[in-house]
Image (cartoon, rainbow, N blue to C red; front, side, top):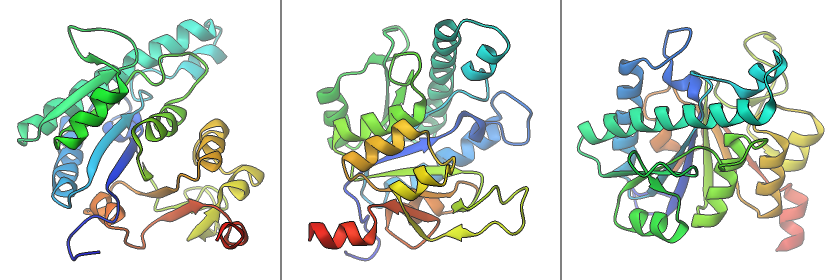
Length: 249
């Protein structure tokens, strides 16, 4: 790999809605969105084709609403609409920095975003545009983690970069348990067996079935998105177990 060039040709960056809150209790903090846009701009210079899947938990969380008595399908539909708001906010920040972008929504709303069309998304990426996938999969009962895994398969991404509030995958919540152990590498199956809440089980299983690696890292670290794209040893790498890799070889 040439110095300063990406390890991966095409990647999916998964952002939670909470990542846009900054220091706020809810909503979108413009300074935080601007910081993320700056990090993505710097990453784009490494040469990778970059698509983003973004959550909506900073505005509305369907599961929490369901727990309080709201009907699940309606709650999930509202959550998907929240992701569109976040996608538009990120698009605005990226374009103010001179990057070409497209928002594609799994729920048709042609006045605001393109409908999701796989071939069109791939063409945008080939032309160097940042593609932001909004509205999850367009279906209730599926999280934006699953949407990230699904879109990654569809567009031929080589890795999912999962940006979080901590610097990798731990045996327990490191913010609550100081003895929690960080994994440098862990298999899909161990993530499922240990009940580690990295991504939901559907997303992990989909990645496992299609041998799509996941890199979990801290979004707040300056340059971390670019480092992950470059293949540097940051965060936690989730992939096939070493024994399974040897068997395939």
